[in-house]
Length: 79
Image (cartoon, rainbow, N blue to C red; front, side, top):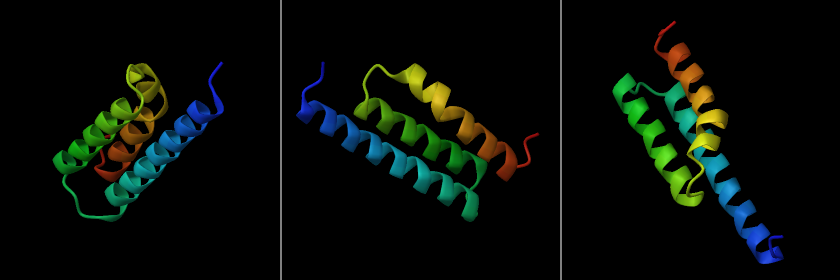
């Protein structure tokens, strides 16, 4: 059972990740980035997620990666 401090820390890290994901999605959808630049941004978000939540690669790949894939497909007509 996590302590209240551990729980607060995890919530803080989760809010940070959610903020970065949201900002990254906004930048990708609203700017003139190339596909390569957008892909590098997504990779950077993944690195941050794994730094905040070590060992949670599968969680990122299941929760956030599909959102980024859909956004990149829509933004760059990759259908």
